[in-house]
Image (cartoon, rainbow, N blue to C red; front, top):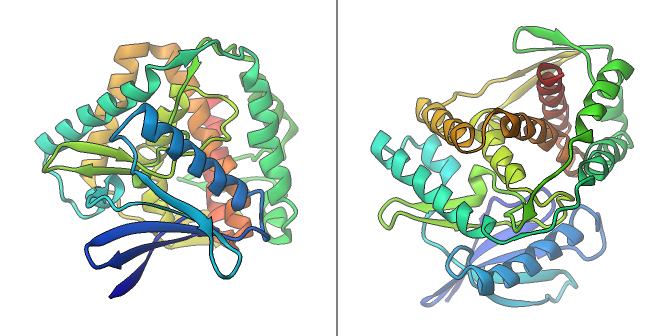
Length: 324
């Protein structure tokens, strides 16, 4: 008996749970033809990173089982099925008590510390390339879509009871760009895409498993990893991504309900960053947090999810204006 259950995956890939007798595995399938840059290239980077981390950090990522081409000519890889929920789902389901959140928080830092322990000489000016590739190029790609382009060209946006300018505004754009003159003093191995839905946690075993790792981050900084946690806990990315969004002219609104337990987790996670690294690194994390919402714009546009693209662009601009 072979049962296939469709799971939630990325914008452009198909992710399915396969059940064959006693063997359960997850298959991630991608087209080798359409949207190659935001589909196949990203899929391939995940494949190679899982393969590498299976050897370097046993148990932190699912085991890679197979890779091939299916009968339609699409590429796929199979990984072991981990019987655990992702952290975002645990928060949405209100599954964790405060003491369990504390344990999960410690387990997450322990898992991060294992990966981040491998360091190498940094490319000190790589933030300048990061801005060109992950901000300007991602915006340029998204602007090829007329619906997003029209929204981008509005004079200002109304969000969170505030009115602010977007990156179309030359002053805002140049002030933001100037922040990327910071010298990077440390790089090393990273997850690359640790949103809370890309981290599985088993309260019974107190075990973290990283999924959907990502390669093309330009800057291999652990502070980038931390920013993607905050993208979800501080900026509520995963919760808002699953919630209806209202876009009316220049006004954006998310109809999401934020679990109080998520706010508690956010408080202790941010405190850990501050206590361990200080205010200077908090500013770098804030900078990365804002850009996470810009990096995803082409993925949302290529998937036809323009409401999310508009909402996350407005949220990014909201964060940028707070930073500058």
